Amino acid sequence: MNFVKLSLLALIGISAGGVISAGVFSFITSIGIIPRIAGNTRTARYVRQFEWLIIAGGIAGGAVSIFKPGFSLGTSVAALYGLISGIFVGCIAVAIAETLNSMAVFARRVRLKKGLRIIVYAIALGKMAGSLVYFLKM
Image (cartoon, rainbow, N blue to C red; front, side, top):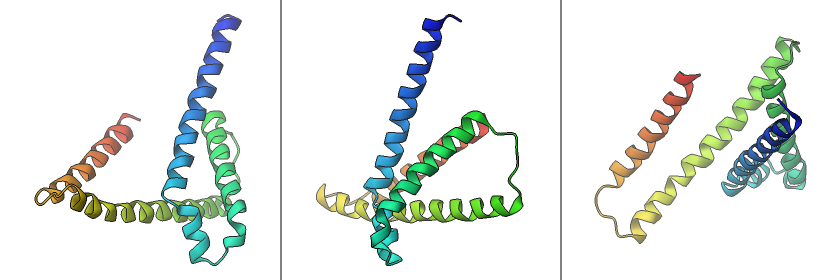
C-alpha cells in the first residue's frame, strides 16, 4: 500500500477509536458510576484518581487488544485483573439495573397502562440477541 492509503487508514482507525472510547466514557459518566463508588466507599476525595484510572484502563485495554503482547505476567496478576474487572462489570450492571427504575417514570409520563412488561422483555431479549450474535461470530 502506498503512504496515502496507509495514512488514511490510520486516520480513520484513530478517529473511530476516539469516537468509540468517547461513547464508552460518556456512558460511564452518564450512569454515575464514579461518584456512586466514591460515595459508597467514602473516598470522594479520590474521584479524580478514579477517573484517571478508568481512562488508563481503557487505554491499556485497547493497547492490549491491538498489540497482543506475547508475554505472561503470571497467575497472580491474572487473578488480580479478574477481580478488578469483575468489580467494574458488577458496578456497571448495578448502575444499568438502576436505570430500569426510570422505565416506571417513563411509563407514568407517557401514561402507559399496559405493555410495560413487554417493553422490558423486548429490551432484554434484544440485548441477549445482540450478545449472542457478537459472541458466536467471533
